[in-house]
Image (cartoon, rainbow, N blue to C red; front, side, top):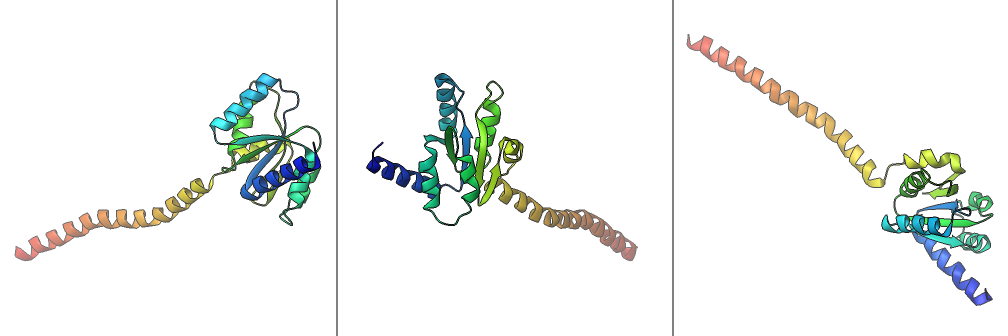
Length: 175
């Protein structure tokens, strides 16, 4: 790779890291070419971009973005490395988990999720359970609606009781 090619590769990676709030660093080195292609196809179909990168270029791209908390990721940039870029925090973890039902790898080295760093394959279960922004907003709306629904329900059911009482009082008064 020439110096110009390296500079261009670093710039492309820098743009990817800058635009992506979530990315996973993985090791898929022992997979066959067919398995890697299958994994890449699954990622593509689900909207996750997989890139095989040189560790030094990825590290330089991360360093060039300044202080964003990437420092703890540098130790994960050793050995064969693939990076999964995504818009949904838990999606790559779900893809990896499903893929590993029939394959040994890819292994999770690290994940960067909105300034939080998850290091090691043991973090995969925690990453799978992360909720998307839309899910969290939906949960909050449900929580906010719940008390209002209870009040309205109580008023409606109480309305029948109150109406019954008023009707009974009217009937007594007319008798």
